[in-house]
Image (tube, rainbow, N blue to C red; front, side):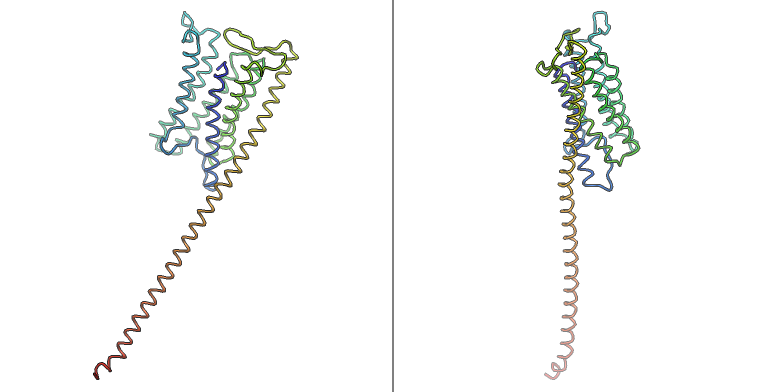
Amino acid sequence: MGTLVGHVAPGFGFFLLGIWHLINHIRLHALHPKSYISLPWFPTPRIRYLELFLIMGSCLASISMELFIGPKKHQPLDFDGTIPSNHLHNFEHSNISLTFFVYALFTIIFDKITPSPHAKYELTQFLGAIAFGQQLLLFHLHSTDHMGVEGQYHWLLQIVIFASLATTLLAIPFPKSFLNSFVRSYSIMFQGIWLMVMGFMLWTPKFIPKGCFINLEEGHKVVRCHNHEDLERAKSLVNIQFSWYLVGITIFCVTLYLVMIKIFQEKVEYHSLNSKFEEQEDDLEDVEAQKTSKNNVESNRFLEMGKIFASPSDMER
């Protein structure tokens, strides 16, 4: 991370993952409201593990960028094999990516070889909780500045990560809770949006708050302010910005829920009406068949009776 692209790229990945889960959870709940069970990931029709493959690919790309592509020497170590202080944050970010890679890898393995669906579900959620826990821990103990404007962005990000961690853990004892799945998807999407906002607001000069500036320190660009008053003003602006995004994302997610519920409920009602109509048609066909069989029986009896009454005349002839 530490750059505009380093925040926007993973942020976009979290955003896609969050909205993908949100749409699928709403759809699943709308189609099966009584038998809904939360899913930790969603297979796709052609490539079953597409979601997990994309997570693994993104994590490998992030690790490569942090440790090999980003550094000027294309390796993060010093001449004596130690980790220099200006590359500590690279190892922290790559460890977060490594944990999510492990989650995706073992989720595929569990899906292939674990016979018990219950154990597979719980272990997958456990790995997801470990990934979010690692992310929260490393952002909380981040080696970069915690006191400046960037630190304020990171502190607010930790709140969203904690929500993802808590809802992932709650999904283990409450797999049928749609609200828990909704909040988890919401928080993952919020993570992505807030990371992208950080990238643009911290590394775009025209978005730097008044009284602050971008300063290069140990090969890392950070936002500094001229005095304490400017710093407090910049932090307050970050808080206000977070509040705006909180309200905006909430409105978007709830509106998406209402729209999708309306669409899928109409589909469910249409299918149920079709099934009822087909059942009625089958019943009518059965009634008509019974009437036809009765008519055939009655006509056969009439013919037999006719033959009986006609037989004496035939004998006279």
